[in-house]
Length: 215
Ligand code: DC
Image 1: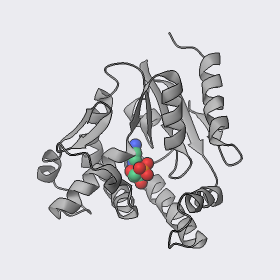
Image 2: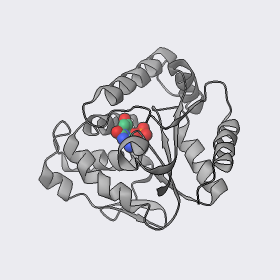
Image 3: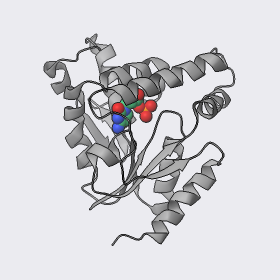
Image 4: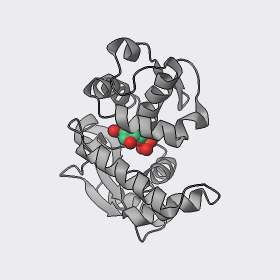
């Protein structure tokens, strides 16, 4: 068993906030794996690499490390640069490439070497840590996820319909790729957050963990 709480699910389901708060409550380290894909996209923009087919040479030039919980990309903390819609769209494209997933596998596994972690992504319970102590699949309807995204960026330029389409396109791309598609692991607990507050979701996960203690 790996000392991992795996939280998978589609974009915009509230995974990141839930995973971060759960990690805080439990005193575990929080790891957001989407940032790793975004970091590669960010380096690819900087190097003008071909986003559609990243070369092994390019990948071997990317150095990903955590220092005090902060992701350093070739020694630099990219901060908010990873959160742009361009970076998200490019991350989703490169995440479909088997070489990229192979490159990130050991990077992700290493993070669990020094104690309990809450790791958030798309394939944590299915591929990265199939033996995770806990597996949750956190989701919400496309409409609810679009509403939340609108509320986060009230002065954004995109309409509700445009955001809804972006989310549904990314779901499609993430769940239909050949390599490690977004899917619920058979033994993962499904949590639909459409009608729950963030606190209620965190409570649900905590209660489940309390009822099912692992060593
Ligand atoms: O969670 P996020 O939006 O930051 O993820 C960015 C992209 O990376 C997303 O479109 C899918 C991909 N991703 C993935 O394929 N596997 C993961 N474990 C995490 C993210």
